Image 1 (cartoon, one colour):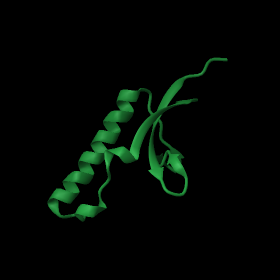
Image 2: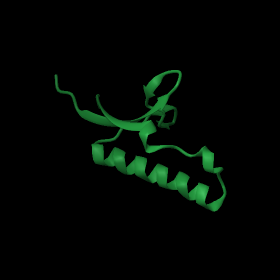
Image 3: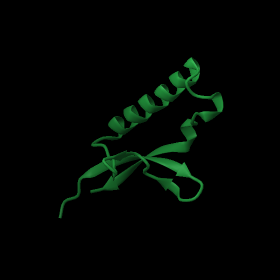
Image 4: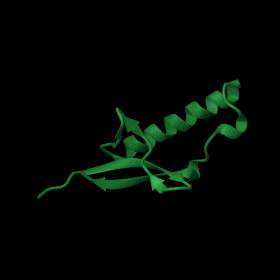
Length: 75
């Protein structure tokens, strides 16, 4: 039996620890490569920072990069 490696972005939550909170149609999103997952995380954090910079989001409503990590998952 062959398994395909996939990667997910996990976010640290106080209640559940490290979980994949990235969803598409209520299903956890995974990525084919670590680089793809990292690019998605980078884009997300950049978008949040742009919202803070423009005043759309309060400065204390952002995220720290340390709150996220990319993990390999078997599919």
